Amino acid sequence: MFGPVKYFPYALERTYTPQSDAPKEMLFALNDHLGFETCVIVQAGCHGFDNSVVADAIAAKGRSCLGVALLPVETETAELKRLFEQGFRAVRFNFMRHLGEGAKIEDVIAMTPRLAEAGWHLQIHMENSLIEEMSDLLMRSEVPVVIDHMGRVDASLGADQPAFNALRRLLGNERFWVKVSGVERCSRQTAPYSDALPLAKTLVTEFGNRVVWGTDWPHPNFTGAAPDDGLLVDLIREMAPNEHQQHALLVDNPSRLYGFK
Image (cartoon, rainbow, N blue to C red):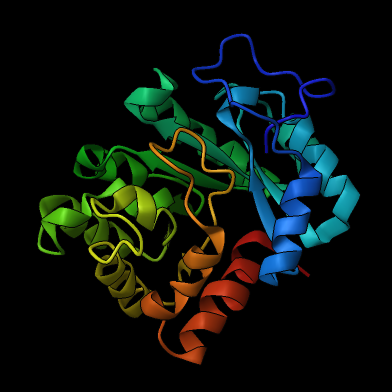
């Protein structure tokens, strides 16, 4: 979510500035329209390490809404436990050039014993060229690791590309999960992003008990017109063709990963 900035100002050190507010009321209205009863809100980079905008939304919805925070790697266990009580379940680290230089992966992995003690997991958003490079270190994580946006692979290169093969090898370890979100970011085509859907379907087919989905609303830093969220929901049937896969993707898996009651 973005703002509203009069209550939740943007971080001074942000790498992007949203063109308009995207507050909790808009998110809740979208979820109601799309038919989602629960959601996980990922802290937006423009708000930095002040996670109060997400905490406020969780408090407004109760535990049908949980959060993924942005935090410094030095964050102590006591603070992680305090945030857990507010409804946060994971911390996200970005390794994307357009988001600026962040934490070192070695320091992120060194944080995972504290994450384990607090009951958190780790979410990684990375350039596809880093999947192979980071794999050995990520394997040392003491908590589950969620790879965001299908590893940002280039869908135009197809399934038999080094980055996608590296992602599948990583997911061969039971501690790793993947978000089959961001098909519009992986695609090199316009909607309905036909080049990316076979990759998402492969991940759902091969790792069906460790895949989750998300809208990525309000689509920060997206080039061109924002995607149609209704279309993105419709595309779930393409990546998860049968009811069992859909239920796992949208209900069972997120319930296990995030701890929805």
